[in-house]
Length: 199
Image 1: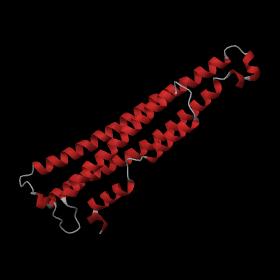
Image 2: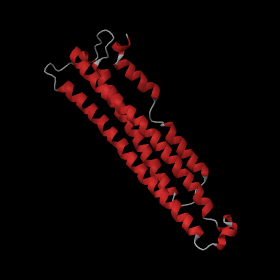
Image 3: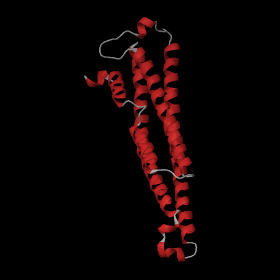
Image 4: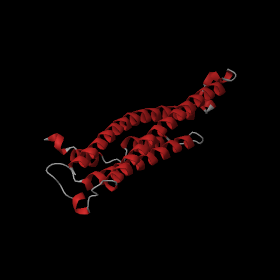
């Protein structure tokens, strides 16, 4: 049983590495979103001929500026989609850790009973905590990935139609908040799994 807990702790160490990578990607996606928002704000201004004043006399200036901004926006949207692909890779990895955890218990030569799964030895986590924890982490990060995908799709749609700054602001706040990831619960889970390291 002790050996199995150590194997789970090893899996959670890899999960922690994936979570660190997730945080880096979150910073990147937030920055990309802000850049896209700034361009969308500029597009609202650049589409109105009244904002050009005397520059209206210069042939092609409006179309040239719009084309340049739309090109920059497309580049950012492509980068955001690549970032989402990296988020998806992490979600798939978390799913694999959860699946492997269940297989570890099922495939054990001395397959533990429900009572053994719920048994605690000293400060070490219970096996059921490990199994539930891996499933919980996959579920919340998967939900957050789906939300991020929706937000990126929304900003792509906004690019095609006039939108208010409040729409962009609300989407950005939703992206920054990561509402599906309850950081206190994640930290509590990690502290539980690595309880022996804290002693």
